[in-house]
Amino acid sequence: MSEIDRLRQNGYSLTGHYLRRWRVQVFRRERFRGLQEQRTRENAAGFCFRGFDDLKCIFVHIPKCAGVAVCKSLFGNLGGGHKPLKQYQIVYTPAEFISYFKFTFVRNPWDRLVSAFWFLKKGGMNEDNRRWAAENLSPYEDFDSFVRRGLKRSEILSYLHFRPQCHFVCLKGNQPALDFVGRYEKLESDFAFICRRLNIESKLVEANRNASRERDYREYYTEDTRRIVGEIYADDAQAFAYSFDPQ
Image (tube, rainbow, N blue to C red; front, side):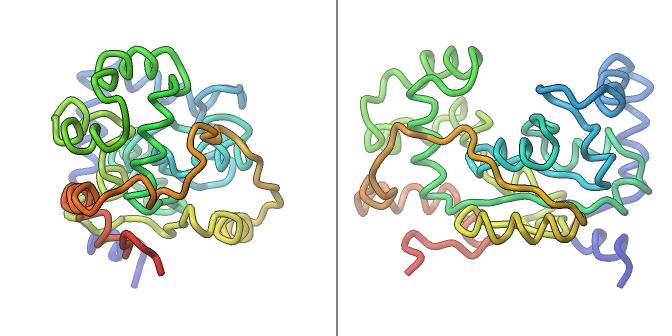
């Protein structure tokens, strides 16, 4: 099976790709120009697609799945940020999008939610994170109250760190349109596989580690909050074969 046929099975449309890219190129010229400039700039410390083109790959960075460490280890910068896969159809031509090695890292949704909550509660990574958390997380004194009273609110579920992982990697339905899905729980071995696939040597650096939580994620849950999170992130659990207790 060809790469484009495999992508089509996972929701990819060649015509849709052309149209999506053309619309932005014609009607949102500044945005399109800015995205293309990120491909040609030097590998600065911030966001940059130069490494993607150099290695012929696309890394979809899902928040709180070790993506900063992966980006800095492979590209020396923050890569493309938290863009969903479909936005890379604007950055790249169909030929590039189809041929580039597309990969991501995912994480147990119950574990990821605990990490995201405490990460933002402690101020996050930048001023936008701090401001959003002050406005939206301050009413919740702990994780339990957040899940019970806040998680279902649209302004929380729409924020990058709480969006389902399927949002980032699926083009249609809940089937990831990627060549490889690495797991946070197997970070080192899956990162080593990616390096072999890209034919490079790289050591995984430690970055953006959440030091605000010391307990296993399962200790933050009650039966009720475990059920609530399981319902909200049911698609993630099914798509990536996760359960609350991996044992």
